[in-house]
Length: 119
Length: 112
Image 1: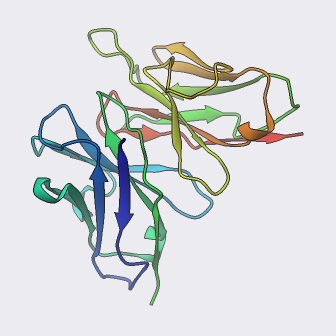
Image 2: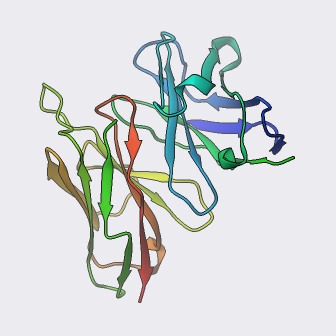
């Protein structure tokens, strides 16, 4: 059974860096065939794709946020970490991580974690 | 980036009737091998999004067969036959052919 769970702070201040952790089970992130991605959803708004990291460490990022995003993995801990620099109130959202089981898709999204950006 | 445009954005439906959601991409989603990475997600109220369909028309395990996906190139459709109360929510298309992946704006399905 594949599960993913997001964790991190619920509140960050403007200009701070956000660090979120996705802890997963049921698969290994060790080959190009498998990946873990991040999606976010501001309150009442649409889903936004953010980033994806493959088991071979290849990474892809949203064009609009590329300069602020970094995604890394710790295979030994079955974790993927997303960092977003210079957080702004518009970055307030529920952040989800998901499994990339095959080309071109994501599934098994986590429960999500709501991050609020406010001073 | 590929822009995904859904219509309608709001879809009131009568229980037992069918509903269709359109998703159009700003460029073809076909790979050179012919595969098309177009996905549909369902987000029920208060829930995380759940993938319903991948590669245009492949239903996930446990997804009722009243959900069906179709399309090619730049035009895709999600059809819900015989809408049930549990189908209420927001539906998103997402393309996974071109980097970065992108979502549509979402279509809210509600019961009349």
